[in-house]
Image (cartoon, rainbow, N blue to C red; front, side, top):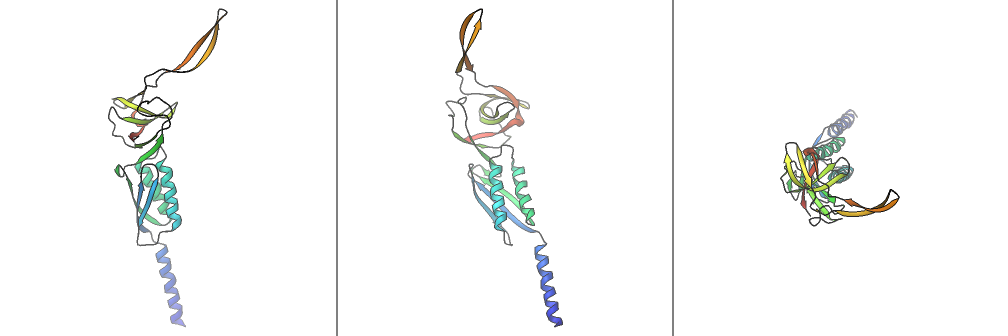
Length: 207
């Protein structure tokens, strides 16, 4: 009777020890630039399916977030692992290499014709390594995300230029002056702008 009680206590202590200790897990997030294609995990412990699902969903959200970085991406995945009492090492694999984070996007408008067409899908690589002549995606304070040609770099500023140099007539308006009516055309000129270099999200690699 005494031996049986000791055995039960020993089992209980062992079970508590296993569940209360953090487990190391290696996580590799694979992407083709448009979606998450695989979440590979290596661990000596059983990985809960709910943990894998959370990582998959968060990875997809981070992939499409223009504000995410390699560091923030990894931090989000490590935070999920920590919820499940795991200490994670995280690696991102894309067509651009290890820990090279892409982002899918879609062109809106004709400012980059003939290089890029309205509605065309593109994939950019998030990087701070910028070269004049590359096509980049950047955050504009008025228009949000824009895609332009990097025309110049001056210290912490970049000059972005539209490939399409044509002036587009987008409408007309009637004005009355001195009793006379006159129809004026409303024109849309190419958007060329200086922006802080930190506003550049990345370089367009696939189009």
